[in-house]
Every structure is written in C-alpha cells, then in structure tokens.
Length: 215
Ligand code: IMP
Image (cartoon, rainbow, N blue to C red; front, top):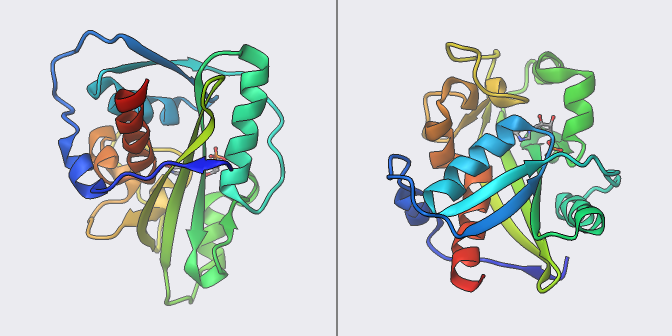
C-alpha cells in the first residue's frame, strides 16, 4: 500500500455527519465496487450526507489470499480500476477476535461462509475474553492518485448468543458483535445508529473528508 491517509478527530467527525441533512447538490461522484448492498447503503448514507454521490458497481474480480486486509483491498482496487478505468473505492473488512489472536481477520469471508455466526459462538464457548474488533479498509483508486487507504476500527465484544433487531436488520457478523459502550449489537441497530460507531463509517468519513478537500 503506497499511501495511507489519516485525519485527526475521528470521534468528532462521526458526530458531524448529519443524517437528517437536506439533500445537497452533489457535484462529486465516485463508484463503489462491491456486491454487498448492506455495505453500499452504509457508505452511501455517509457520503451522501457529506455531498458525495456514489454508484454501486458489481464487477466481481479475483480476491487475493493474504493475511493483510489492506493488501486485499488495494489489490481489489487495482483490479477494478483495470476493468473500468474510473475513479472508485473498494472496501475490505474483517472481524478480529482477541482470544484467537485476531482470527478470522482477513479470512472472515471464508469463516462466515463456512461456519457462520453459530460456528463462531461454538468456538467461543467457555471463553471469558470476548473482546473483538471490526476493521475496515477503504481504498480509493484513480489515475491521478493511485491507491489511497482509509482505515476504520471499532472495538467491542462477541455476544453469547445471536441478537438481531426487528426486521432482521444487519448482515454478516452483525448479530454477534456488540460495540463497546453500546447495549445493542450491530444487527439491533438501525443503519444510522451503526453509522455512528462502525469501522466502515469511520473509514468512509476519512475518505469523504479527504475527497472533499482534494478532488
Ligand atoms: P468482506 O470480505 O469485506 O466482504 O467481509 C468479510 C466478512 O465479514 C464477510 O463475511 C462479511 O459478511 C463480514 N462483514 C464485513 N463487514 C461487516 C459488518 O459491518 N458487519 C458484519 N459483518 C461484516
């Protein structure tokens, strides 16, 4: 990864996102390459409130095997840019469980596909230390900038049981991840609530702040 863009005052920035803002005229547009509608909606809500329009494009490239989430995201961005030659973002995320030395981390998609949340809860039976974190790596790629990394991390813990909200909201590991200082799991939160604390929202806000200042 060539450049990582860091901005200060992450907490403050999260509060600055006005989810109820009047729609603004958006002159800025970026493509989000993903096949995941949940991710797209979360990021769209943030960028839209900050005056940036995004479109979703699902071009399924090969995801490299790596034990580094940033590397996976950067590679996906380069692959996607090679295909569509437009400024874009991609995101790779992972759930890092302390008691398992960070596993599944970059292998989260495979673990979710195979053992799912029930399997994680089973593996954690009898384990007292339930600390975990979610990490999001957003990579922006344009001809002008090359790959730029924006990171977000949210600490929390793995719950004892799956907890979903009404209407079955959330996706992936949302029903078993409860952020610190929250009474709800990600799955029990509305999109707006999740966007106030999530790893993805933190990364998306960093990206949006940088994009608005420079592009
Ligand atoms: P991906 O490779 O970034 O799509 O994500 C790896 C795995 O983590 C997938 O199984 C996703 O469903 C899951 N995941 C990614 N982000 C989140 C999230 O915000 N909440 C819950 N699960 C997530």
